[in-house]
Image 1 (cartoon, rainbow, N blue to C red):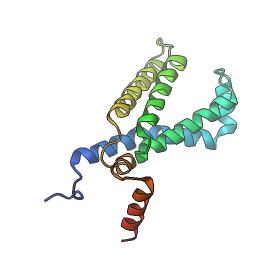
Image 2 (image 1 turned 45 degrees about the horizontal axis):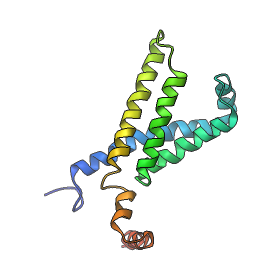
Image 3 (image 1 turned 45 degrees about the vertical axis):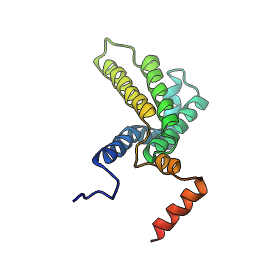
Amino acid sequence: MSILPKGIRGVDVAMMISRLLLAWIFLHEGYTLATNLTGALPAMARFGVNAPLVLATVALQICAGLSIAFGLGTRLGALALSLFCVLTAVLFHTHFGQQNELLHFEKDLAIAGGMLALAVGGAGRVSVDNKLSRSNTPSEWLSQFVTRWIH
């Protein structure tokens, strides 16, 4: 007897948890930047990053992070964050003489690899993407979702 809902396997739950873990760092960082723009804007300006780019970064982290967490548009969100991580590593963490910078470089590349794997593999069965792909139309899916939520 399984404790999981019918049709859901352990691998499906593991995929959902991996999405949530990958999304967390971007949601947290995006939220932190968004709620501290007065400190973030001058700090990023010292690295040559202007205000519109900081705001775009916040939007990317929050929107793509939510995309991955919910499994909606997962492949695109993961691909965007993979590229973001590679660029962050190459542009900001190349002072390899400092152990902390090397660690951040490696961490960014590792996260980029996880995001790339997610972009290739997709969100998994416990995701909005999966629900939408199994429904004939988005409105049909929404109707089924609301019906299940009420009952």
